[in-house]
Length: 186
Image (cartoon, rainbow, N blue to C red; front, side):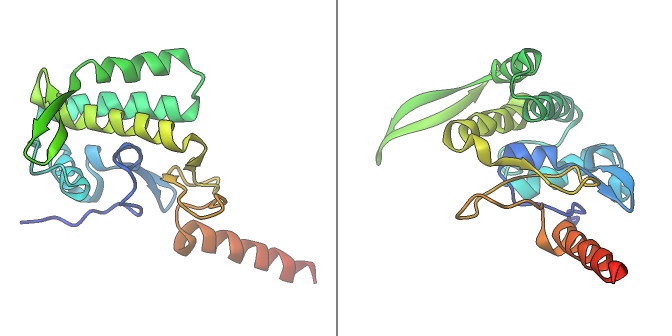
């Protein structure tokens, strides 16, 4: 039985999608890995693995969850303050558990990921994805501009000015608030 992902924002790159396993709903913090939507911790992990396309490669078990929580905390600190040396050290510690091996395939050059322990796979994948975002478009890793939202996104807009995790949610609330303020002034 497949359980629907309860999070308000999905489909971001894996590293940011991992950060978005924590969100706010009706002013209350939610955590996909800590019982949100009535799910157990491991069920929340299974939902996340499925939504990110990692379920076919990795198992939802307690050890994988512990490593993923380690990666989530490291990434949260690194995104919040890219200059934080201790955050970079934490991300590097996650990356120590895997590597990319160059291969030659029938189609030509290829790559294969290898892990010292497969339960580190999703955590390593998220940390590696963060490095790829940083090497491509570091200024486009953003936190939603709403003061009450904790979600992150990768700004893929043409001019790089996206401010909200979602126009339908936070953006609409901000527009409605501005409209209300203007009408009260009259």
